Amino acid sequence: MTLNEKYDVIVVGGGHAGCEAAHSAATLGSKVLLVSQNLETIARMSCNPAMGGIAKGQIVREIDALGGMSGIITDKSSIQFRMLNKSKGPAMWSPRAQCDRKKFEREWRIALEKNNNIDFYQDSVDSIIIEKKRAVGVITKMGVNIESASVILCNGTFLNGLIHLGKKNYKGGRSGEPAAEGITKQLIDIGFTHGRMKTGTPPRLDGRTIDYSKTEEQKGDQIINNFSYLEKTLIKDQKSCFITYTSKEVHDILQEGFESSPMFAGRIQGLGPRYCPSIEDKIVRFSEKERHQLFIEPEGRETIEIYLNGFSTSLPEDIQLKALRKIKGLEKVKLFRAGYAIEYDYFPPTQLKHTLETKLIENLFFCGQINGTTGYEEAACQGLMAGINAHQKTKNKEEFILSRSDAYIGVLIDDLITKGTDEPYRMFTSRAEYRLLLRQDNADIRLTKKGFTLGLASKERLDNLNKKIEQTDKLIKFLKKQNIEPEKINKVLKKKNSATVKQKKKLFSFLSRPHIKYEDLLISKELIEFVNMHEIEDNAIEQAEITIKYGGYLNKEEASAKKLNKLEEMVIPEMFDYKKLHSISTEGKEKLSQIRPKSIGQASRISGVSPSDINVLLIYMGR
Image 1 (tube, one colour):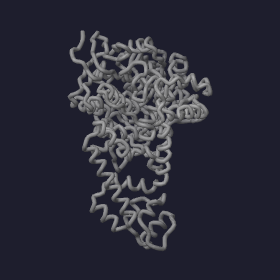
Image 2 (cartoon, rainbow, N blue to C red):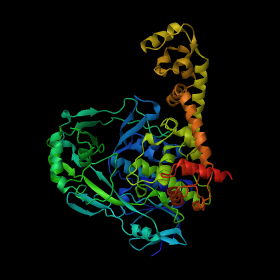
Image 3 (cartoon, rainbow, N blue to C red):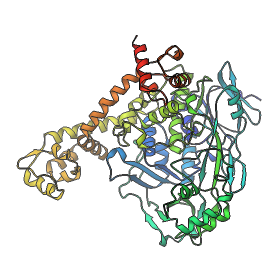
């Protein structure tokens, strides 16, 4: 059977990557088909019910600034908001929201169904239709042929997924859902290299059986922010999370089950996430620690189900329950579902272009865990970029690529395709050279004009951005010209242990000091009147303060980024023969021939390519 309608883009998989891919391509004007083996599980939060966190929060803001949906959906489904790392500099501030799992799914489904360019089809995709090394459609498990101009694979953990629980294992993409088979073999036969990775999830608990009085309450922020720059959704009646700890007794019980552990018995071949290890892994790797922190996180407003963050495990159920009942507050706990590990196929991302299109097959795009990443946010931003570029390619438009100085999204994609990964990749602020430029507060300034030019970000978003920029500039100019008398400001300076002054000075000069905040300057009646008269909004005030306080550092990073971008502009021909460069090392030739970097800048970041190899390339390109 063949579906009569031909699509511009077929998106395979309805997880976070698939949702953003379908939304972006459809919003730009492509006719999109979203194929999922279960349409009831679109945008399911397979692991913890939260979005954002260190570096991940910046990614969600970037998705939103470009016109994606993850920020809006998170705001609509949030039950708690926290700005992490607020005690550190603004480059480290990272928004995080606890979400209502079911509401998150519903809001995504509603958003996608409102887009008339998206069709839905429930089935599993067994293979890709390929003609003359071009993806031209898919064949489903039920034998349905569907034609398209491009295909985006967002398979998550479903490719040959194998679930492990103690000595038991069974095929599955996640608990209660079948694995996807067929695609891996086809891609290997075509010539793709592949590997295995693993991830895990903690047990889900019955919240009625937890004694919260024995735990530490973790409330949300009093001042609630949003992920989205567009819509303002305040959380009413935030729900708390709670903190408890393991102990030596708990560790001893868990070790009883190590002989049944699929990880230690060698039944799991794939590497797990280094930065989100299982509780078994923590006990072994950090044997000097007598306890590990655990977060008791609510799954939503209308459920008693609890997610135990930090207790990911694949040990037998009886060992899990026995250990849990030795944790403070969980002495009488009941399980909804035991934790488990899942092993799945991935394809090393060095086989992709910056657009996330595969090098071997034209118009075939990979995004999410198929590329070796872990995390909703990492998957979502790849989906957004793959959706944009699938649309651009099929409509003969210019490809859309973000550089490392543009966004964390640019850092993530460049890391993946240039360096590859042999363990689940997670984004951290430390991965970015220019993290002071890539803050969560300025993602709109960096990216909304780009999104608007594409046709993804709305006119309303652009208007909001222009208003913010105008108000920020206006406030900075005022602070540069408005004086304040020493008798007023010295009271503040003494309290802050900052040097006092003997004559009038500009407000700007005081805000430049590390320990002086904008709120400290509100002793100036003129400043209060100016802000009220011009209706300066909080986001513009925050932007002005960061610009003034970190101006010197920002200028240095911008200058450094411009130097880097010069190397990015030095394009290497796609079919360049590296073997003819005799002065380049053997390893350098092999890596350059395999990855085929687009520019000298990308070549310089390839592991195994030395600075002297780059000098040879520069000399050759100069000629």
